[in-house]
Image (cartoon, rainbow, N blue to C red; front, side, top):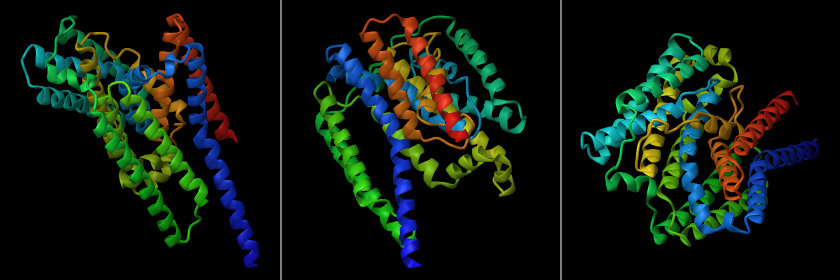
Length: 387
């Protein structure tokens, strides 16, 4: 009897490992293939330190939006206004600094607060007035763009103070970059060791040691490799460090807090969540407020990188953020999605943009290719659901 249970447990463990490999590494494999293809067609220029540094800087705005969009989609909603909100919050920060001479910290706080307030406005309509998020945020897209044109009078607002420009255009010193990389690796090994100990204590199945530590070792090599490549140019771009910090905070929030578990429960089955006592309206409101605040941060980064605020800033960013989430494995049906996957999806989208631009492929092909990839990702998600 015991031997049969042991055999069954072994089979389950193998099944878990196999499933894990397929789902988790598909994105990594796709990213590696994209890098190889563009590397070959650009004679290696795509993989140069300078281009990788630019690529990470370019993906920062979409990555910040994708972090919040993951929670929105997991909760079973959508936000079509984040691109306009990025333009508006960036415009507010630029107006306060250029026209009214506000300091950089206060302008940044103002942009984030404005984003959170507009997120509160939209969340209230969705959660407490039961207006579909698609309609509310579609209206928000037009409202925010209109406000931006009105308050900026259609002008490009620049130049910004040097301290503001540093946010999107500065780099960490080499030594600090390596210290952060090594600290990250130590934390990875610490967390995986603690997770295995906890599972053993609770009597749960523990994944194969080789797979767990092998996976962390591969991640560590990737972290050191990327740090080395970036250090060969100017160092780690500050915008990508902002993304890493935000990703860490939201990853913890989504996996280790009751709020995160509520969001997944609401997206998975809203009726069951309501019956179990979860406050649906309040949590949906919080998700939209967080999305607005993140759009404010993305607006600051974008305005800083461009050293100007324009009425067209943030155009189409909402579609890129949604595409990054879907490509990263977030289900448009709700209840399923990971922040890390969304960031890898953003990197894939940025790599396609960057690689095709380096190959001098006309812009309309970029839209066509990204649209096809989005359709394929959604079809893959629906197929997995059916299976």
